[in-house]
Image (cartoon, rainbow, N blue to C red; front, side, top):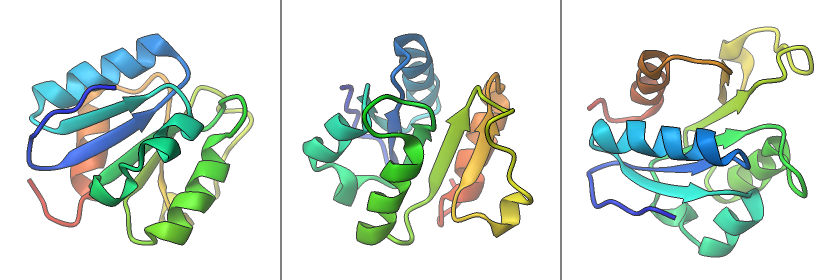
Length: 126
């Protein structure tokens, strides 16, 4: 796990180490504080949920997937911005992002798209 003391702290959950490290570097370079987790379980066990401004999670993960994590997060922090990411675009095709309780980005996404999605998700614009 990486923890930075920047203004807005973002938790990233992904079982793919390369994606996790890449997103961590991107967010740190954009001056976000970052918590990195290789599983939903490790993120929940860390008890960081109360301190984060945004959650980014992969959908397809073993043990607990992104949708189950979303359900648990919504029960504790209903207004927390959540961005779900997936490389399985054929498994999940939502009708309209505006109807969803989260934002969705399909892999591969650009750094620009990720940062714009985070900026749009956060209640206080940076």
